[in-house]
Length: 360
Image (tube, rainbow, N blue to C red; front, side, top):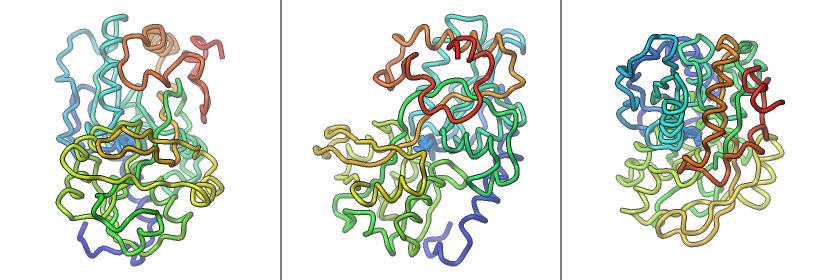
């Protein structure tokens, strides 16, 4: 997207509608046996990113390797496709820890794929090319109810079902310390990476900017790792990243550059939550990123495992049991992922296999 691209010159909702629809139709058609070559965000997330990454997604901006060469062996019924997010976020490494646990404790093999995270992953679950995926709880609700964003408006994903919620996906607004950006209001006129087109990170970023009356900005769209490179190179002024802290792409950036995490706090935070009830208070602890020594207040959504109604109940129950009976083998987000909290913030109908495990 060119640097002179201005968000005022187009209808942002139409962009989301078109690109996320592609996630439901085209991007979701990835093979369950290998990598999709996508950048992606977790977290969104996304934050994300994803961001993911982003993380959002999101969980981003990486080579799209899927962490699996598709040659794990076994018949097709024992191979399950698990769609994650970009390799620069939290979804991808966490999904590979789940893979290690499931492969070791069941007869199933998880093929983990790097993807564009939440919105793309919903499309993959909808058409059955993914058996499980990590998504944001707000995106799950939008998709299931056919509302919230134009990508899902009157296009409810009826077979989408929940398994478990995992951890807060922090909305991280990052810039370089040398910039003049110290609050969200300073983003007017800035060039901002809002996450991959159609990602949960982009959705969250645009929700926040709209809630706070920021409309005059140049929008860039890329995954978390590419966004970090853009910041380091001076190509953008700030980036939204959605994902459980610490996000790998931000850690790497902070190790080579002086960064600042811009707070979403006070009246700004209350305004954002008033417009979008799925946001919750969150804090990035001081010391999470090199050079950022003070706590930073912000907001978060919730990362969750989702599946589709066509996956057999015993398969979902077996995979769920393997993960939650072996949480001591995880090294990522261990303070948040628990059996007791696994239904907190669950925004959609629970799959019967997950319900059997959690006795829900």
